[in-house]
Length: 455
Image (cartoon, rainbow, N blue to C red; front, side):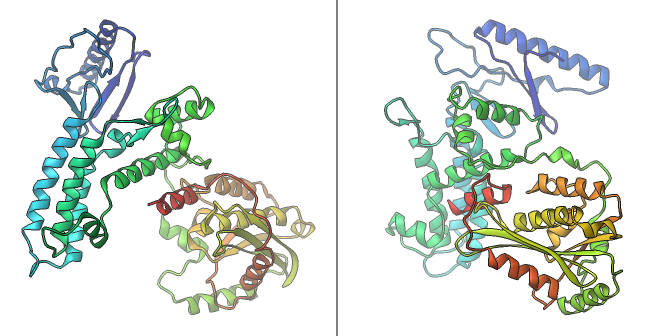
């Protein structure tokens, strides 16, 4: 249906976006697409409510042009709970949210005073869930930041009124949480209640939302736009472009690599396959693993892999390979600081398997066993992953299927239980912990951690 407009939606809400240099052309495009959708709905047996389809033309510079009021009689369009006005100032949206949040904040404040009342920790939980979530709803959409880069200096975005309104809500929440007097200063209220000023909270919400774009499917409109911005960073000056450009280089995750509607192993089946703990103690699982290891065919290759992150942020991985109880290979390498322990363990398993397959001993091996002490990595090594280190897991799965001599198997090992192979892998990592750290892109978990550290 139509190629000159963009259509996107959520659940049963559909939005049609059209852009042109003429208001008349824009209205014609949108109207024709609405008619087209209504006809399509009729043919498919879907009914759209005509009273629920207002349209608006956002514009900043309208000159002498007069745009008639919306059909709903209001100066804004509501979509997914966000009020879009013509100039995208979102003043109506912020006013409405502040009014609703203030009502709840005052209700919480009435539950206590400086002498008695509900415990402060419970009031803080209620304030976060019932007030702050309401006040900051959709902030990733409407918050542009206090300033933006200009030609010579930073330009004010004119959001001081938004910040002042939200600050009143935050202070009302702080007074509801704490048994304080009316004259208590603002800095004390923020510090003792654990709440943050609106500007800091809004910036964090916007940054977190930008990080989430790294795991959008490749057909998502925001994913397309992000790719265009990264290819031509100097050609885009929008608010979204500034956010994308500020992101550190990081991995892109494709959630459609393992869509929810496809059949896959259940977690219980995966835990059975890797011999997970399943309500057993670590001591019991350690004994079970040693018994299993002693009964393995002598031609099988067993790889103990591990990864770590030091206190200074440096990361690395290592692996040790055995055949018939003899060490045949070992390796350890330093990784980028922007990796997390989860990522290092996944890389260790991949590199250990790669070294085993090209070794001479693999020619007589029946099976290759990957043994590691991280249960989350173990469950994903032979499965489709839609999380961090997706490319690593995909490469591991492809490499395992390419080895035709036998089967690559995964076995979970309880950590810190004096299992010889696991301890040997730990020693190999420590030997190279002081090596120079290479530079590279952030993993998705590393990028999220970086975002949290900025809070």
